[in-house]
Length: 374
Ligand SMILES: NC(=O)c1ccc[n+]([C@@H]2O[C@H](COP(=O)([O-])OP(=O)(O)OC[C@H]3O[C@@H](n4cnc5c(N)ncnc54)[C@H](OP(=O)(O)O)[C@@H]3O)[C@@H](O)[C@H]2O)c1
Image 1 (spheres, rainbow, N blue to C red):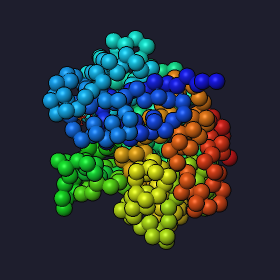
Image 2 (cartoon, rainbow, N blue to C red):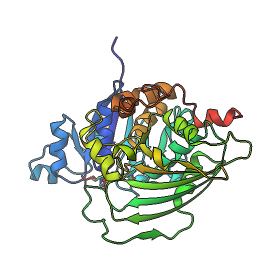
Image 3 (spheres, rainbow, N blue to C red):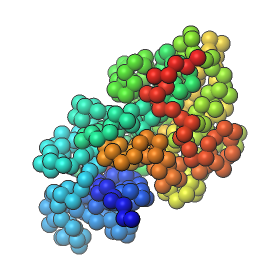
Image 4 (cartoon, helix red, strand yellow):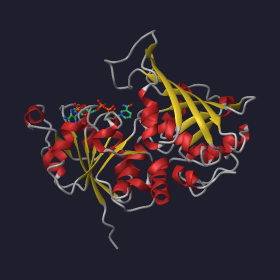
């Protein structure tokens, strides 16, 4: 029997768009209609080598002048799609939503550079997959917010969290971005709290969270330092208990500095040659085992590393399935993980109590909220 695949278009073939397109190509229940380009450049060669159809955001002439054939324009791509994943530069969402609205059946996923108000619904697979069922417009939250939501909601399945404080050390530029990087300086985001806590609360409204952020001269990954206070009636935290809970989520990778993974550079080095042909993408949020601690008052502390270019990719894929109502959370997360090779390194590490590519043991944040943890 032939499966009807969801027809997906990707508008914007930059840092996130290229990775979303690659991920869509790997899904058994999705078909990539094509991607758009605003500028005729080498990335068209890259797309065409992969057999991806390229459409121009507007006119075809600049593309043809440089010898790049295009399949048509954005509208031509959209009319073939069930859903478009908007990966245009931050702030273009409003303009693009007006274009998408002229296709009455078209659904659209936006990225974290857009405001929550654009779609009225912000998404994370661990927090609110079920609520995205059938929605027409969804925003996948930013890389930092995705990491915070993933880790906090996972811990919340065992512990009752009272308050989170997080310090975010952000990369100044992506690896392909030659214009925005900084050298030899620290640029604090002087707004207090940083916007990340407001974003997390879009998904976990009852959570007390405060965040501070700044930009550091690096391109590889973001770093977070997290402090988590528990409710008095929560199961008390122990280091093995925290590790075991985090391990239940295949999208969190427990890494070990004892084994030489002492920095984000080492993590990226590992994934550049390992991880099932992922082209260096670290879809998992990484937590250092040796960096997890519980202080005398029972407060948990930990360090995280986040590949800003990659952790939102599985969330985009899950958002598509949820919006098109073709899989429940467990099915979608398992399918996405298998297609992207998420969980492979954990299996190789053979840590105790780590279910093979499975999320069965991992209740969603919502389910955890509803069941009392004693
Ligand atoms: N980079 C990250 O770390 C990261 C992480 C999570 C979320 N996000 C969010 O993801 C979104 C995309 O960010 P990005 O980092 O992928 O940006 P990016 O690397 O600058 O890519 C954006 C792409 O959009 C294309 N574009 C320009 N104008 C367009 C238009 N009018 N319509 C459609 N496409 C257009 C550009 O194409 P050409 O190359 O053809 O000019 C560019 O390659 C933003 O909301 C951002 O906040 C980014």
